[in-house]
Length: 330
Ligand code: GYE
Image 1 (cartoon, rainbow, N blue to C red):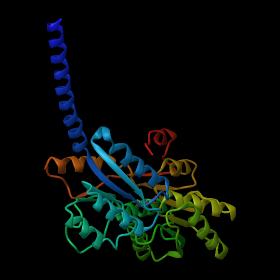
Image 2: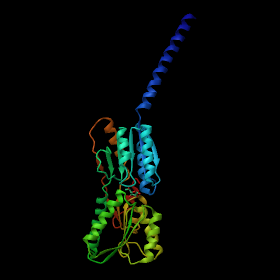
Image 3: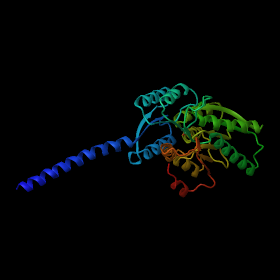
């Protein structure tokens, strides 16, 4: 009996020691998670929703992260407030998509003083102050605009219309955002290059379907003599098309209004397949894997690129197929 009691006591001591052992291990596991504060612009478009989903589905606990997400609801002051909160929380990394390019120097200097690496996502920040951020991941928006103009020039050339007088409506994205700045510059440079191209209206659609519908409706009250509508994202293109069709205009590249769009979301590509959007330039929102790769390299003190541009393509209403759309991830 004594022997049995001795064995039981030994077993209990071993179990207690194991439990104590297990406790620090669980705490270590908690400590090894990388805490990322993510300030997102908002949820203004299908593109933005896909971008958020890519970050959320990549920076998961299973991949070694704790993600703190903040939706700024299109207000820069909300982003600045969120970044300050991340700094107070002592996160390991700050990730944000700047609504506009300016106004970030002060808060990013605070992040630098707190030794928190900042990764800028999607849109860019304009600053002459060096080292305000550790890495940038996004698109070359001016190149996207140039891709659109090159396609338009080739199309008009094939149609024998390159020298025609063309009346262009321009629906811009959120003013001061990198996507708007780059895509606008490409169009404005092309109008300089083609004297017979005329910009009959230029309004901000703020990357939303509702705003584009509203401003296009106002333009159509002034004129329906329109050859090309250049929209800076799919949401705007869908809003502008709805307004044009209500005004009796047909949107198609062959004998109607040529509609150009950006993002190449599934919804935008369905309109392309239907011929209502003539050209859709891809803007890839699936940036989560790029963020994960850079953070893991920083953690391992491995070299990484500071500027990371994502390769993109384009689709037009003459060559797109349903199979191509079905293969898309967003
Ligand atoms: O084109 C638009 C979103 O910054 C590239 O913002 C992004 C743009 C995108 O609202 O759909």
